[in-house]
Image (cartoon, rainbow, N blue to C red):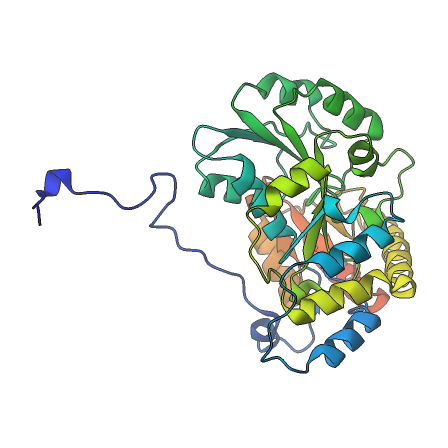
Length: 374
């Protein structure tokens, strides 16, 4: 074996991945509960009323023969998705994966590597930047325009070059709660060159009620190079099952399917997803509660003097009158978990999930105590 001196030692690590910065997850609900008497978790945008009963029943029924492999493909769930979309899309236009985050990973792996570029607009979901970095791609950030977090259309288009492959947009946006008007989407899609795909993350679309809100659906139906990202974690209450999907043109879907693993979904997730799509009563109950409680929270927060941004999601972004970590700790002391979002590109801001009336009243009571003392 040939010897190598220390100066010519082969580096086995990719230069764009940091080996000295290990991932540190947040504390679990169980860990936090051990430290406080009563706790309301309003930090992760989870469903306030639980999981789809039909999905739970499907899971319970499916807990048989776990020694057998599940379906080799996601075909049955894709068929159910086509039905859910009133057959406006073909089942071959859907791709399913373990969570919305994994659908993003599939897209990024399929279209980007070293030398390629993508565009994001902070504040936004951290995963776009994280996974793109894993592929060695360059991330171009065109921040949302303050104070209302409006999309900088001209700034985005000015960043597009021959190496650009993906543009990530989120509507409603996490963590700001703002949305992209259809007119703005029309402008961007019309002016993007053919080698750039628009990835529109719409996982909170059920909660949007703005008249000019639009999903990716009309653009995909028109054959545009657009991908619509969705998840079963929010509206369907299946965050623990990790089910996500996207829809796009059949050409793009077929291309990305080439890197999908066999048995991509476990049996329980597959059956839960199919059942949840048909649970229209639960879906409507979730949406109705979130919209009602969102309006209630925003009205009460105004009375308290809390600075926040009107939301189209199942959460509200606020900027407390103190350092965000201090605010988080004070809220936790009062029994409410909230989420600081500096990592999302919103320094000094905190995201509060819409909960049940009981949870929301507990949150408001905590806010009153904090703001009276600040």
